[in-house]
Image (cartoon, rainbow, N blue to C red; front, side):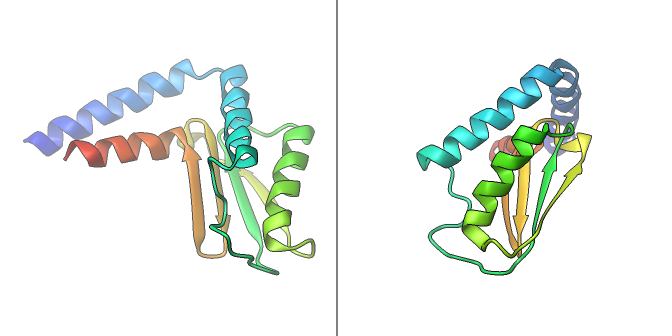
Length: 122
């Protein structure tokens, strides 16, 4: 029963947050994410260099050209200039970014944060 209540609460929370995150707030979350990367609070790859592996960046909304350039520069500094960075949009992440580099995933999404919250409630 507790699991069902938790699942319903999380579904309602996701719907509420998804509806309240307008495009401006979405881009603000992305800016916050990269401020964390630049300040060292968010570590893309914990001290390791992964050369030649491609990266996939997922956002809830299409990134601007400037945001893509910042993302690409930061990711390529970790995986090497010859690697490729692809971008895709998935509204299900609600906001923020998810970066996949090889088998590593950096989940800075709102959906990921909600999932962490859900898991901590059990």
